[in-house]
Image 1: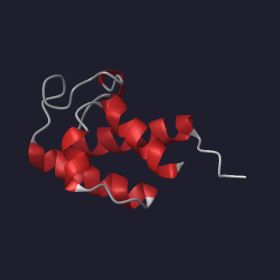
Image 2 (image 1 turned 45 degrees about the vertical axis):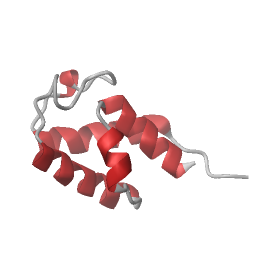
Image 3 (image 1 turned 90 degrees about the horizontal axis):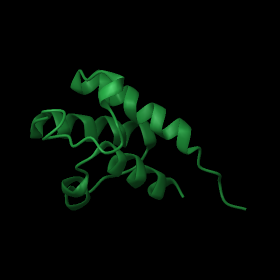
Image 4 (image 1 turned 180 degrees about the vertical axis):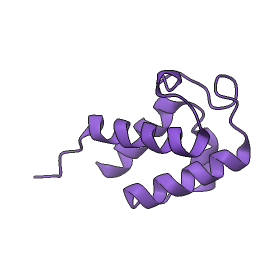
Amino acid sequence: MGTIVNISYIETKVKAIMMDKLGVEEHALDRKASFRNDLGVDSLDMIETIMELEKEFSITIPDEAAEKLTTVGSVIDYIVAQKN
């Protein structure tokens, strides 16, 4: 039996980290929200957020993968996939 991933827990933690690191309100963190276009996140903020997510979830997010994480939902889906 594999470990059951709690998607709700991951989503909650991801949003908490984003609110902390990016200074964004929770209501703005819709799964479809684009970091650059909707939230105005610059690359330095994104790097810091990725590092915090790696630490929180004990995963490594390679640069190639990080470049594809352009929305809140894509980050959540990526972490869920890494934890499965």
